[in-house]
Image 1 (cartoon, rainbow, N blue to C red):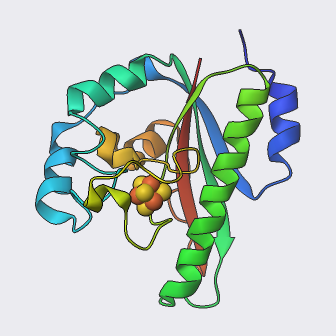
Image 2: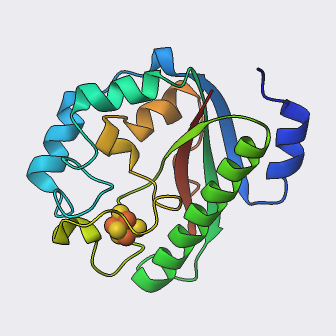
Length: 180
Ligand code: SF4
């Protein structure tokens, strides 16, 4: 089944989507070095369901990704009054996650099965249930981050000849929705 691009474009016109590219997951290769950065440098490592090791091994993640032949990689744009205002910055990120969820729902309504990867780790709950050995409380809203699956966002940006940064007081957030 093919994605009806006309319907898709009509739908995303409701949101501040800056750019999107359709990608083939055959072109994605999980990078071990990204997982090393997760383990060594990220304080979220081992603290949420959206991060390694909870998301599974790199091989498992790659297998999951490849089980969806297609994906739509997109950026949403937000404007903030001050890039150093973390609270404002986070609210734009939450808006992006919401948009991602909505686009995912649209694809499901079109008859696709989806798998979403997004920006940074999940911060929906104040304390992730992972830390208490409990299942995720919002699996339908939780999006593991791209890097947790060894996917390098800026490589997708470069290969798609997309903008990574628009300068000024704008922020671009990225998501990848895989579908089959
Ligand atoms: S929704 Fe809550 S429990 Fe699930 S990954 Fe996010 S923070 Fe953890």
